[in-house]
Length: 270
Image (cartoon, rainbow, N blue to C red; front, side, top):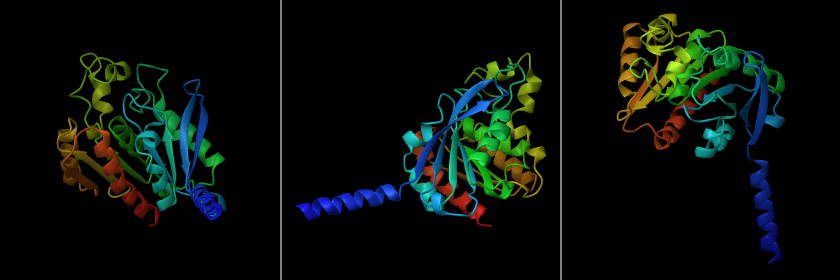
């Protein structure tokens, strides 16, 4: 009996030693005058390695928060161990859409993530500040956010992804508090046109930014994703695009993240 207890103790300790570390990091946003929580997942090898770690920023969707990925796809911690890079899950508010709102001065999530959060993470952890070691992806609103941030800040991000992303927000003028961020479409059409992903393709040049995005064929964002794919082909912008059976839900995203992490792992190894 004592031998069995000893073996059980040793196995449990081995699991703990090899498990990733999950930190909650509060970051002060000067641009929004508030403190914002973020989850940082460190791979099990982080404490013992001298090399600077690549970082993947993983964004949540509308109505969600920074805990979504860890709580709803807990295997994400094992993926951090497997691929040996840091995963940061920022809080983007319930419906920020990850840009600096032209009408709401209290919503500056583009500035927060691309400047304030990245600066904090790079100071606190042993990370590489090179764009070749930094990527961003997310689901739904976070998919829009990942492409928005990466398209506008190609000096910061080397690769970007999206899962069921809102690649064209114009067909949804009354959804997800978008009118609170951009104003009513009838009155502020220029804000909507300027801040929808499908109209931002002109910012891309060649393969300067590595892209992967996917969407389920039963998703309400499917049409926009397919149109973005076709537009990228027309512009000769290299990208990975996947469409598969699926809807706008966590069953789809928990499957999708596996392919995206493999893509980013290959990118970080280039």
